[in-house]
Image (cartoon, rainbow, N blue to C red; front, top):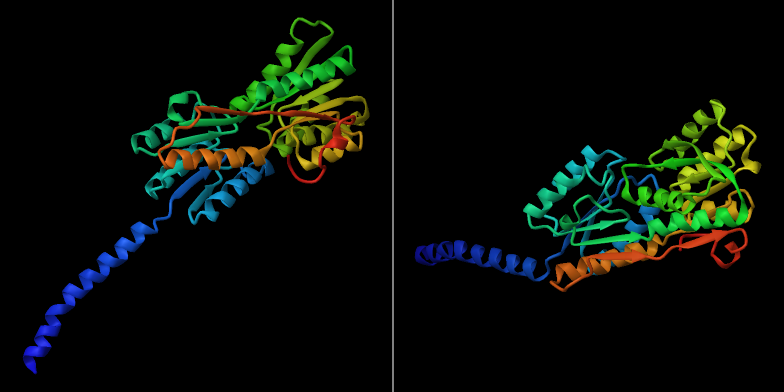
Length: 314
């Protein structure tokens, strides 16, 4: 009886080791990929739509998406990227707060062997990203300027900018380059509003208080265009000023349909999110992928808004 008991006791470590091995084998067989994402701010619904599309694809495959919001702080975003690396993510999706300031964190990702997909902007060193997925941002500015030229023969312009985001820089550059050399259009002011409604309103308000009287406001995105319209309305100038934005946000489309906002250039965060998911799995499966994907944009005006769905994004 004692011999049988001792024999059973001797088997316990062997059985335990076998169980651990079996569980480990099952974990490996059913390993869930972990993808980290950080966007410049989740205060802009544009990024929420990208993230929702990305999450839909990732979770449908049984994998995990870890999303972070740096709230427009590059220092916080860099730390988030490093935290995600410590959590052993297999791939990073990054929309940089600052196209230059994100570089050290992306270098850490490269050193760790974690591939990066950059979305809705570029970074200063493109070799740090396996793929960059952006809207045709320069053309968005061009489309706004061409519409302005076709509807107003002259005008005084205020620009609402975000110099730290390459996508925003490209939009304003496309707008300004198209008008360059035409003396009928004068830029009388420009303000950095970081693409935020709550910053755009006081930024434009400050210029209006100083006596600037624009005929046109070119805003880098729809939230800043909304802030501009709020400031113009406060000063009783909204009906006299052409306001341009970029995004194709539902609120902007409604304003255009009502004849309050002049135009927006619609991006497609749905397409960007879907393309990001597709590229992420190409990279993770070892397949080749494009280095850059440019998603087309569409000008929406009062005349063309009827062909677009007013609710939701493109």
